Length: 313
Image (tube, rainbow, N blue to C red; front, side, top):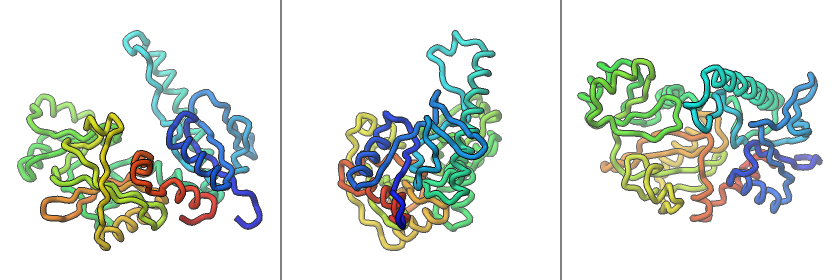
């Protein structure tokens, strides 16, 4: 960074394991780093000239690791049944205000040319799963046959055409479920809640972690469940990761997906079906990679620090 001290901000909660580990790796590399939580009641301000968080001017940082920022949704309550609708509405309003200010600060810093892993404009866009799937289509990325709708008869026709169907929430945040023997009455509830329906792809679960154009890790995740995140071993932190040798064309595909989506860090989920064909399920802009790094030695965090402090992985 030509003469200026290297200083990066880790945007996330102070008790987050990935944020704390990145702080340690950065410090060991001689890079000054700080964790900046934007959520909660931490003071945040814009005075017309500078963005400030907890008394820190954000312009003092040259790079930002975007671990988390306030979502535009209300905080949860300990007992929803005891909370009046007016209180919930007020909490939603407060959270929306906080989210707009925090995201504005990050987007402005991106506009100024600060380095991000990952850029907030990209992360915000990838939160829209249908948009990501449409982008895959435009890029020629192989992904499962898909229907996104709130029209139950269309879902039944799709199911009759493809067979086993997996249902996923449009906004993410929940595990995939088999449509299976869902009754027509239960399926009718999607009229008010559009859902992603995809052909089920059998086969091994592969997670590829990319930083820049470098593939830092490709592992098969041992699992006997539809969504490996729901497995008991994974939930208990006992997931087993087996190194997976990607064919050159699939490695290139993962690099192309990362670049095409505008990401620096990507966690790409693949399925390797019984015909030995790779199918892309999704690309995550905030992958939970630390368990893979700790168990396999993949230098993912070090690559992130380099990308932020040197501008290249």
